[in-house]
Structure formats: C-alpha cells, structure tokens
Length: 217
Image (spheres, rainbow, N blue to C red):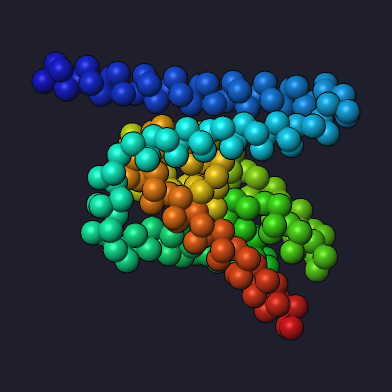
C-alpha cells in the first residue's frame, strides 16, 4: 500500500516538474521575443528547424533500436487508423459546439476546427476569404499547440497514452512527437507519427471543403 502511494506521489511530482519546465521555457521564449532585435528574430526559424530535426533524429534512433514495435504495429493493422479518425471527428465536433456557443457560421467554425494545430496552413487558406476568421483560425490552432505541450504529460499520466495524440493532432508527427515519446512509449510514438501524417493530410482537404461550403462555392 505504502509503495503504491509513493509511486503515485513520485509520478505526480514528475508530471508537475515537466509541466513547470514547459511553462518556464515557453515564458522565457515569449519574453525573449519581445526584446530580441528584428535581425535576430529573422533567423529563429532556421534555429527551430535545426532543433526540431535534431530532436526527431534522436527519436528515430530510439524507435529504430526496438524492432518489436513494428511487429506489434503490423499485428494491429487498420486499428491504428482509429486514433487519427477519432481525433478528426472530435475536432470537428468541437467546431460544431463552438458554432452554437458563439453563434458562428457552422462551416466557418468547422474550417477553423479542421486546422487541428496546423495554424500556418489553416490561416493561409481561410484569410483570403475572411480575414477575421483567418485570425481566429491562427490563434485557435496556436493555442491548441501550446496547450498540447503543457497538457501531454498530464494526459499521459492521468488519462492514457493514445489520448496524447489527440491533444497534439497534426503536430504529433513533428514538433509534438518528442514530447509524446518522452511521456509515453515507443509504440505510441510510431502511432503518433502515422496519425500526425494522416491528420495533416486531412487538414489540406477539410479546410478548403468547409470554406467552400461557407461561401457557397
């Protein structure tokens, strides 16, 4: 009994520590962005790409070192598709709920929800049709990505591993993958990558479809 309580206590401490680190790093980045010269800010994209590539390289090494993962995934077969399909369905349902709560055009709300953390693409597609909706899409999906980084450790320990993929949505294949790998296991990391690819492809299809429905095209 005591060992079980001690394990839960240690798990909660690790979870709180990880969340604290994420928030500190995020806050430090925001403050740095406010005071950083424009010349330096212009090069941050290159540094981000390099850092992300390095993180994904080490994730790949970790996954490649365990051949059992791919055997287990092969056995799972099409069941793997349940995760991205459920994530997409949940995101769209959230869009419908928001359209009712905020009295938005339902197709506009679905277009925003279809961004699924890919804020750059969704905003680019939506803004030429509606700058206001484009701004909402950008902020909504940026906020979703930021919340995913903060919540993934909590979701992994308190809800489940596969649910972390739903939180990240499209970023599960790139920026969110290292965080998911750290807080779950290698098998979930592979599912996260596959799901992220499928979700990202769905963004390129769903956002234009819903925008077309909104404008009657």
